[in-house]
Length: 316
Length: 244
Image (cartoon, rainbow over all chains, first blue to last red; front, side, top):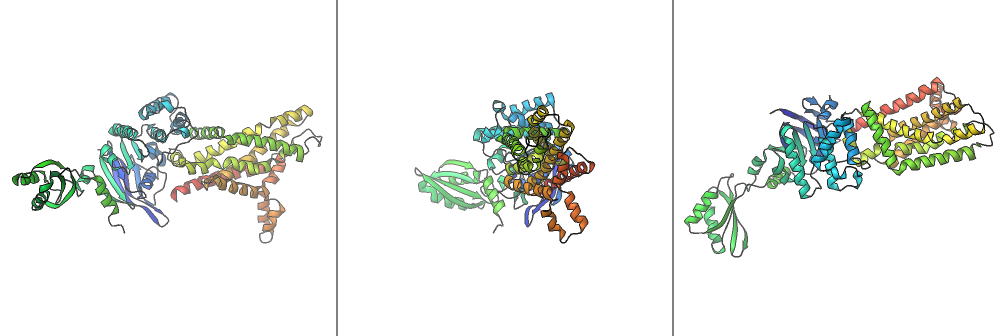
């Protein structure tokens, strides 16, 4: 795996505020890194340092081996960047805007026209190519920002909340686009939408108060969830208490909760100790006691539980 | 050079897609005419020259040019496009230069549209067209100095009104530094050479020469230096913002 982006102890202080505090990670070719964190955790500041908009207080950011501070032009040439809020010049049309960005990147003439065509096709902008950007919907404006970022086919893509403000169909399109492009690129996507992580990311870095609190694959994070491998089952209401007592006797069970009752059927949730596999044990146990299980499902674990725990843990 | 040209093209187009450009041009032409006829006695002088027309230009520029320059950086900062611009593979100076040139060309267009004055004096008499051309160049140079100052002011804020007021105030100081009112503030305590230095900064003194069609080396060097220094300061302001 070829390493394409490398951040080393990247730090930014604004006056007395430590916005980013010693962030290090790297991203390889073909990898989509989800960059998560609550608002104000330092996501955008980190991305701004990586793209050369903000100078780090200390630490380094490298893109394809080029230090963003020492060789800004070479680093910037290799990045496609969608800043937060997808800013663009409202008085220009998407076509005019992409021409401007392309020429600033040294692409001209036929080659520029070809690339604009490709970017328009990938982001579905053909129909509004000549309308002023300020008259476009939020979804189109975001796609203009995206088209601008992929115009020069950069090896590294940095996307700050690319799906913010899009409807579910548009979100799906953007995620598909990110997946398609990930084959030969290193992509960093910041988001606070957790479903996005499952949909597009190979790896997740979670940041809170300027520090990295997790760097793992999405499945690994799910495993850290208290509900990972928890068993959800439904039994007859009459025998619910009996079933709960029985399940509690298993030493792999940490806790049993009674969730709801509908039409005389109770739903129970059994939480495992250290993510132990409970499914078979629970069903055998209840079968042995003659308690019929209507339905049984093993939970994967919820990313937002993990996210909350990691980003709120230790806060006052 | 490609990058500078691209920035110039975009900025110029931006002027003409908003009403600002047309408002500016109309007001400039109307005021330039009104001043020349009513205050300057264009006809009463009975001379086939444009001195009564040019002599008011610095005062017109004092509040019109900062209005042209105020959006250059303040608007980028307000709308967030500065983040896009500064993450493109271009140097800050290239962008600073491109923005300056675009605004300068724009004032040049407005100035060129005063050509009916030139036609009129040529119809009425036989003026020295060399003097008129020199005065036009001088007037345009003063506009350039004001734009360079206004661009610096614009880079300091994301509020265009503040950029305008600040730009106009600094332009005023440069314009008036040769007048006793300003010099008196220095005379009491500063050494004579310093007072003379401040006086030599006066754009109005330089411009009065230019309006007569006299371009001397000192004036040319002074204006070029003023613009150059402002562009560097502008670059510095934008770069410092990154390190803040």
